[in-house]
Image (cartoon, rainbow, N blue to C red):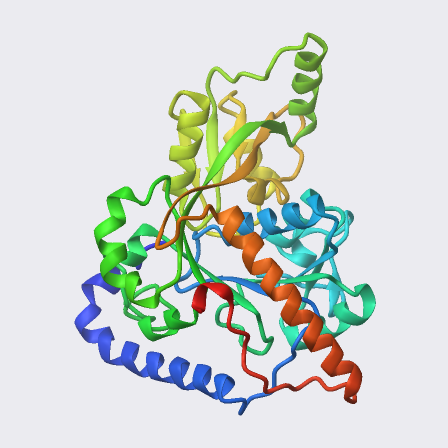
Length: 384
């Protein structure tokens, strides 16, 4: 999501406060880098998936891609997440098939439903959840969801996600004058940049100008719908009938609704997949929790409703109303500053991280168990 119009209009007035906020965040990061603040260092390779700005950059789909990769190669993964707007019965909280979005947050529930072999752990204090998960599950991969600013857990790899706006109109516009959580200097800690766009070609010159100096690869990625999946009982009935006849589900018309950071991107994705624009696009605030009355009101038009997987976990079932979502695939595209695909680059980094992790485990075995560490982060292959 870009900064709000009021922020842009008041930019000269808000800019001094933005500089103060930037200084505080930069000082905080330097304190962690210097070992002045306590950090938890996981034994297993640890990867942060985060961003520089608020909302809509595609963190959850990238986390999902990492979990799918881990499952494919038979590694046991753990995701540490704060669970935005979550009210878990206890912390740390392991998300299960019975967990609700109210308990765990919409995105953790979505990840847990899609990746049953992964352990999704909700806790705002990730030092605590990391130590608990390490003892409980002995993971082979630790993923920090929205972890770029969460520095209390030491990581081996920083994947920093950007939106095209971050490179243009939003560049270095820090809260409260813009959408960035930190200033440009924080980007020096990235091991790779992932930009949510179909192609880097239109951004090539600005990427060279603004990201080239960091000497790390840049990859594009996008979300590709594979098929429609039923959410409500009414939709499930339609799906089963189509399945009996060996036919795909095709909606002649539909109402799109969502509560996400970048609703315009969702509409464009839906339009491409469905072959037509929605009859109506109902937009709600990010992480919105739906009521039966809201679903009934949209369904009264008599058209099927379509939402994102993130929304689907919060939709109550209303008799007779079809609600569908998309099965999405995270697709990596072109790259800059490397000749490798993202998968090849990731595999290379994984080998380096496993080697570092093995050394770390040996060191811990030789010492008394300790939560705090002050060892520098490893130098990975793309930094040599």
